[in-house]
Structure formats: C-alpha cells, structure tokens
Length: 288
Picture 1 (cartoon, rainbow, N blue to C red):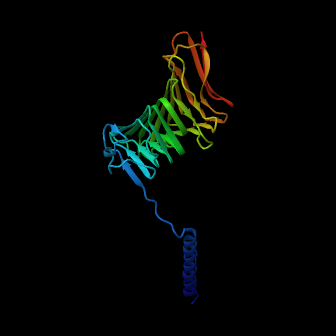
Picture 2: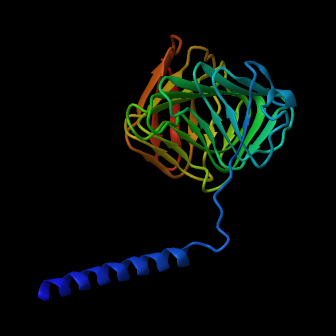
C-alpha cells in the first residue's frame, strides 16, 4: 500500500502547485488587459511625398497611433510639418529611403529602426534641412536582430534631437553608419535618456567642409562606445586654421576601445583624434 499512497500524494502536490501558479498568474494580470494593437501605415511609392495621402496603403496620412513602414524600394520625402507618429521601420530589399528636407518636421514618440530582420536589406535616412525629434526613444541605425542588414543615417543640415544607437549587438546581424556631413547639422540630446551608443558593428563618420564639422552634443546625457566601433574623420575639404574640434561632446564618456582614423587631410595639416575625460571625442588639427 505504500507505493499507491506515494503516487496519490505526488499527484496531490502537483495539483496544489499548479493551482498556486494559476492563482498567481490571475492575480498578476490586470482585469482590463488587452493585447496591443499595432496600426501600421505602409508607404507605397518608389518616390513620393509623405504629405500625399494616396501614397499610403489606407489612403490616409499617418498619425500618432501609427507605426510607419518604408520598405522594399520605397522612397518618401518630407518638406513640411507632418503629424507625429508612434514609430518607424525603414529598410528592405533594395534601398528604402526617408529624406527630411528644408521645411520638413517629424516627431517620433517611440523609435526609428533603420534596418530589417531579413538578409541583405538596407535603409537610408537623410536629414537635409529639416527637423527630426525623438520624443521618448532612440534613432536605431543598423538594428537587426538575426540577419545581415545595413542602416545608414546621413545628416547634411537641419536639426536632430534625441538619442542615437548605431549597430546591433551581435555579429553577422545589423551594421550601422552615421555620417555627419559638414558644419550645418545640429545634433543634440534633450534629456538624460538621450544617450549616444554604439555596438562593435558601428561606424561614425565625420566629413569636414572647408570650415570644419558639426558637433554631436550629448552633454545632457552620455556617450558609450563599444570596443571595435569605428570612427572615421575625412578632412579632404578642410581649408581652415589649425584648431581643435569637439566631434562628440559629453562629460560622461565610456570608450571601450574605438578604432579612430583621420584620413585625406590636405598637405600641411596633421590630424589626430581621441576621447578625453569630461569633453568627449576631440579632433586636433595642427599645421606642419
């Protein structure tokens, strides 16, 4: 009789454990819990204006409840102030592009992901005179969780406000490049959450004009650079005096070991760059 009793007690114990787990789950779940509903808005044209309703799948312009999808050879441009959106996914087969030009203004509450979880995909964001504001999250350049994908953000002029993350954390997934072209762009953090972060699979490129190049101002937050991330500084067009330029400004900097190179400076200049405590990444241009 001993073994049947043990089996009975074992079944009873398992039933009690299951009941306790079920009660815990029921207590944890809010009474009014509902599965989230994602409202996607797909841009459908190879080249067209964001502000034109017929360029979107539902023939209506996206708004605060929408996650915008620009994929597979679609190309959107913004040249006026448009309604803010929840989030955006930019990237696909072929080149998927968003251009924010002079007069254009877009606010994003959650995040922008440039990249796609599909092999050999890419996305391109161009800031060329407009304004892009990230309200509560980051611009993710090159994010892709499992497959090879490329993300590129090019800031030529205009204003960017928010945090930036470049690259995915795992090898053979997403790689990202942020290119700062010349002195015209304004790039800045607005809160402590707006950090500047790279993974090892990131490249930050500064392309100087005759006067220099814009500073990425993250003094309101902080900067974290992963070991192996690349910083490329191209001085081919520089024609100014010897000087120091803060490329990424922050009092809180964690450099894990970036690979920094200064290339193409004209004859007569010697250039070097390094991360400095309480300042950030500083470019030093000297005369020979």
